Length: 214
Image (cartoon, rainbow, N blue to C red; front, side):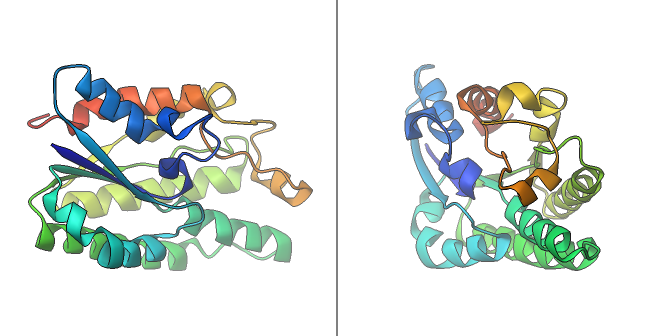
């Protein structure tokens, strides 16, 4: 069984103490400890938007995805974060509708690409809110997750409710967590990535979805 994890810096393992502590590797280790023979492959980079991931799937990921048994997709946080930071700096409204329109188009294209080139089961991860004390983050991430669920449903793909696992626990699960406000980024601090415990929580939650017939 090959498990391929697609995503951005979270899936890449940014701020985990080692790559072995990132959730894709932890999930593979958990499955192998249950006498399953699982290989893991990660196609993710810090800073990747849904557009970047789409092109990576087409260029770099096609071969391994075609051999994969299960593929997880966790993307969209960068799409929102870049736009939110720009709106804060320029003191302009966040164009959530336009951002999510582009995200919807890119995620749909990713799902189409995978389904056309592979028999892999696909799961889409929702996005936790690293800034739970920011109304801007609350509203935009809720809309992102609604969109993810909507697209996944239309492609007959399961969603993994990562946002629920982090809700109310961000201070313990996010590396360098401070005030939980996106406005802190204007002061040079925007903690968003899971710490080792956060990655462990994700791995424990996602592992059952990787098993066939979940």
